[in-house]
Length: 627
Ligand SMILES: Cc1ncc(C[n+]2csc(CCOP(=O)(O)OP(=O)(O)O)c2C)c(N)n1
Ligand SMILES: [Mg+2]
Image (cartoon, protein in one colour):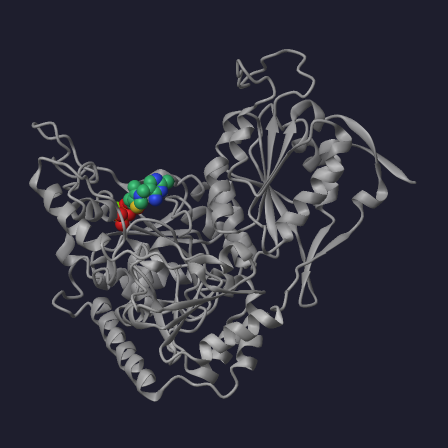
């Protein structure tokens, strides 16, 4: 057996440089690059190994560990999970900064390889800097925080243990059922230890990403249920995108006339102007999709996790005998809602289902009804977008008008990224998704701060595309750090900062649950001790400029349109900073069409909460268990 003598970190880097995924005959690097911030826990191990590897595993410098994971996740999502990034950190705070990013990756089923440094395996000087000393458990380190948010976790406490650990890590990253955050904790002494590695461990290895076909009996049962349906509705989730199943979905819709609604992760599976596309579903859904869901007799969930936003907290599907057919590659999800499981890859499953449904079409009256509902909603979108609707081009835009101005400037190839605040709901209701990769919403974890680093990840995956990060002011303040990375790397992301002086989304939510907008506005403390003073004199545009961004400051809807066009044409990272009209009546987006369960105080003295609880009890009475 030939061997090579390398350190553990050098062997890991070499191993990663030789891993590939393959699907539909196309090959991709499983790990295309490694983000990193160095400290004493990785500088001499993984850091030295990356340096020594030359460009075998390219290195990317970030500012914040959590943000580096977001960038990696944006990259993986845009690559349909076939290529991912690694993230190396020091021990201690650098490692625990990964936790939020790891949770986001795992919840959204998106691959990222985390390589936190860990405290010495040999423990020569207990404790080392930043070591957790757990009085009752000597083998616990802060990296154990990553266990529940990782789909695979291992700690490489001996050099040779890297072999099974690395192989399992690669397997899980490439597995469409299991993928998510994968963590290999690397004690700092072990990283630098040498070992004689078998050449086979370091050779090219291809991970075939399978497309399992449905079980014939499950397929027959699913098709029989759909054939019997008079009012079927298909929900497209993120799995449709991950599997590149959009063409198969369109073929099914064309053949059957079944209307297609979409979750945040699945939006864009059908183009917005396809006759069967009825837009977003659930709490942030369209009126037409939610009405269809309310009456559907069979719901086909394709690649969806059925989150509470999708099901309107188990109130949306109201027909007494509604049944679910769940096409999902993960049995865990296929069995939700007591549905008929159709365990398969989304593309193979949709193709097989279309075959089995040959000759089936929805009743004409049903098709006419949803076609009319779709046209009505389209008019709602146009109204929300229009700057002539009561407010001229010379006025400050509403948030919906910001989306309208963006809609007018983007092409099919543009990507828009968002995750948290009031924008996800507005986008889910209003955005006209024109291509499969355009609508990039992270709503599994809805993590403020995902947007800017994810935009960098998408640009790294696809350098030619215009990529827009949409961020609220609260979100901007949470994590503007990676603007510096975009500037450093010359990555021409476009960032729209929507200034409304605080947490407008949570403010509205707070008001609806009797919370009276407590703690949700960014204002000075008033003499009575509450945050009801003037808005803060914070200049986020100047802040972005200070980090090296080109910044445009449109003040009216007309100026905004010009600024967006200028940003789109620019080859520099550019921020468009826009102050929007605030307050419920001028937000411009249609209200929620369905409920979302946010529990309200059962006892309270303040009248707002008492009223909100009465309303809550009425809504909660509509909750169902689908059994
Ligand atoms: C990291 C993180 N912390 C807290 C929240 C809860 N949260 C959801 S939206 C929101 C406010 C977002 O404010 P901003 O970005 O200004 O958007 P706006 O609501 O004003 O549209 C908060 C605090 C979250 N989603 N993510
Ligand atoms: Mg805000």
